[in-house]
Image (cartoon, rainbow, N blue to C red; front, side, top):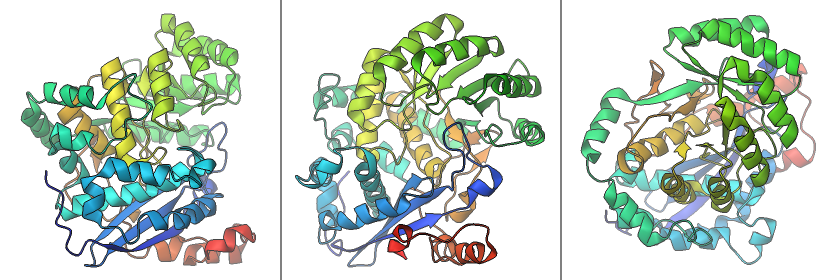
Length: 457
């Protein structure tokens, strides 16, 4: 696929907004460690001299978003003044430049605030590229020749698992049947599981109502948050198992709450409820710990899922090599954009690990559907044992929201990465000057922001 013509594609502006939604008021998104999240994002808009725009974001949980916004502003120098066509023509080089500046890499490298900022910028660039080609991102990726797609990836530090040449050959080996798989996606969509019924802050009554709701919507896979109190976990998980029946699938998610030995013992006691996986059982950086948990729980038929807070492709490489994950959970905003995510998919495929993306936060469902569509069409070629997380929150704020029917993500059809907010969303929920936040401050629903948080006002 040729890159767009350079004419009119000089990037003249990069704007970033702090956007927050008051989800903590209803306990939405609550888990063992994130007890009061306000689902938020740093929202990037890039504009070319011809007026073409790209929209991207990185997901956050409220406080701290202002820090990522400042980091994105500091990274403008890598983007403004560049020609978008030149970036796309040598995307891997651009990726290394923005992630490995000799001074800014000290606050990473390729992790934390710096990498979250990079993800928002990279997501906006991919959105722009897809819009210029008049395709949804998944179709942009699917239509690339293996050499073109691989040229967007920086393989530094992962060639001991997969080289550029191996990646090209792997993609070429999967070409047979590609058009049929695209047809399947367009006709049938991609399977989803729900976490919406399982937030830790929900009452038992809410839990029951939401299980009933999502069963009627066709869901067969339900994830429940655990990790604070075993008796409460067993009671809640038993209730979910009772509501959904033995023929449906239960998964549990501890969000890093346990030590390694605690995770093993806790899950052995939950094993009678037949959970398919335990997600993030311990520190997201503990490769050996996850490997030990995986080995201990294998006789119980419980896999380990992790990756939503995995910092970069090198961490993923080690988890995949060690046997520390049986379900690889890439996140569309945690590591460095599509470029780096593609490298994780390639390593997972070579090492035989299923990819089941993390989603649910602001814009995450919108983005990961594109990635999993590409994976099925061009790489894994199968949906067996693979699912995309679905949480029914904040979709109403997007021009092109994800559509899930009968527990399947339907194919995005509009150009881009499905990341553009509707007009008015920023005016209402931009922090702290948005009209909804000003109202809540005035009514005492939330305390007014402190000095640090007003830096982006």
